[in-house]
Length: 84
Image (cartoon, rainbow, N blue to C red; front, side, top):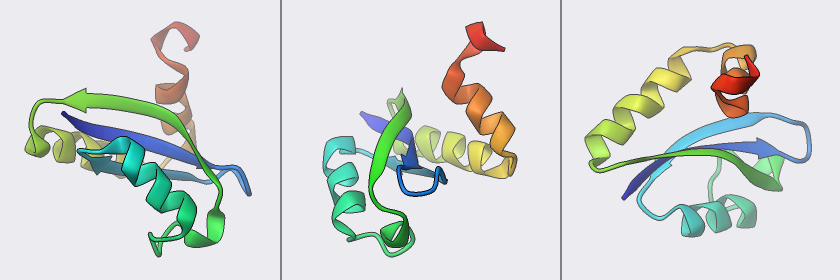
């Protein structure tokens, strides 16, 4: 399974959107500082994920979420449809 995921920095609240086939391992890499773009904002916690059968479908969704550019849109996705 391929996952689109959203992490939130416990340091400053920043969000990171990514895609991986091994979410558990990827989260460990983010928190150990192995990902340069997220290293300064550690630690991270997983706040959202979606699963896809193909990597191409997951990447398409990742890019869609990243294109929003608005924190409010990302937070609405995290909260879910029942929370407006």
